[in-house]
Length: 391
Image (tube, one colour):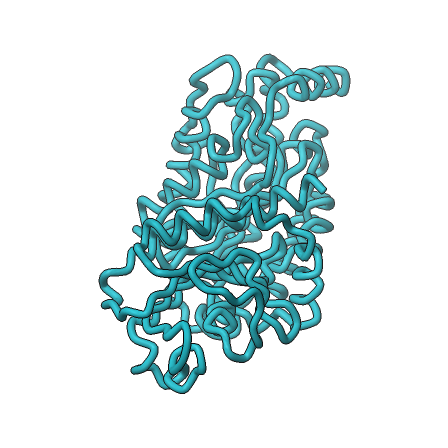
């Protein structure tokens, strides 16, 4: 069994897997944020992009079900076990998420880990999530994927591992049952068929649809929880921690972001567009089109208010908004009336700045395409994260 497992893992390591930033997004407003953590199918064997992996298909499946935007952060490693998953969770700001989806157990099934050891490890994970997520966060434990869905795991030994996986799944289901916000979903009923000799987009799509149909109703409950728009938004981020993340982006080359800001200005038809980095007491305009200011006092900026929220901030007419009516940039040059901004985050979720468009002419909030604004902001955010990875 050990020899077969070693060979199967070696074969799996030869398969392609996604590169780049382990985040995926589905279009929509008022986005829900999901953490997908685990091994096996979460790794994305057989595809080169996270968009085509289980995480990408799950984002789109959930968006279709909920009719809202979805952000999925993916934390994965081929050798991840229930123990190492707990170590990884300890590094993640769990307050960010409406739902945490845990997909571990494949390695334990292959190693025939005793059920009592599995029970102990899974109990620690559920207890940790219950303590460190916010009220209303839904926790979903995925069953171990069927061995027939992974070509490297086929054969008599695979059937032995599958039988053991059933025992571990029964323990997981038993542990989730008494917990209000914890749920177990089996990946064996309905059975997920294998479409290809090497896992591909269709295999992940089918699995994501099974998972999405189960998770979406739970996600609606999390979305509607009264705690969601309170402390969950920014209350767990200290200014010191936020500033540390800002420091990592000070060396950003503005030219890399110029196209995204210019595109926002063009698509929204505004006189100006800005990417601002909220740095200490200053708002540094790393890219500023249509206004001359390279930096201004943070307390005077619309973007400083934008980063307090988790989605788009729309100001149809600043002169009619008590927060900004006396602002010197409203009463004087550049005479801002209309503003729309979306927060930009560091990889850890800390808000570091905002992409915004502004104009001296007011416009109705209903005229603002929030989906487009979010898409442009996420595009710029991914460029920032990509540069950080390359440094």
